[in-house]
Image 1 (spheres, rainbow, N blue to C red):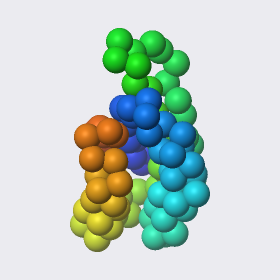
Image 2: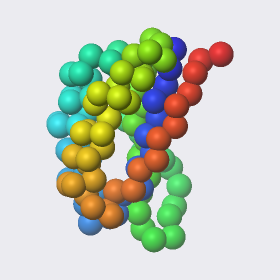
Image 3: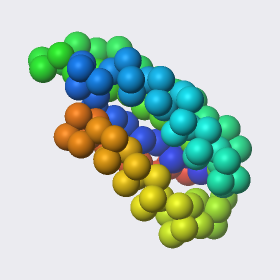
Image 4: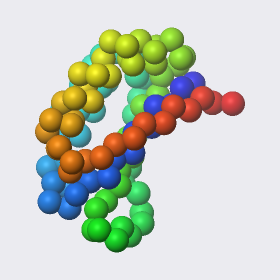
Length: 100
């Protein structure tokens, strides 16, 4: 099992819109491409000095080949949509993990 983890630091002024957009648009788009079998969406429980909130979205796929298909054929467009919608208001980093 491969876990694709995305952590996003979200400015307070876009937080409500960000959550709605993730649930109603972005996550359904991610699942619709057929690479990921399930997902989980979390809010990190910690205080931030600047008032921002961190969110984590986890997508699960069965093997690295499917993940590489996503990276090659889908990731640039989907990442660009997020960056265009929230320029400098939602800063992301990705982590790829494998079940041992």
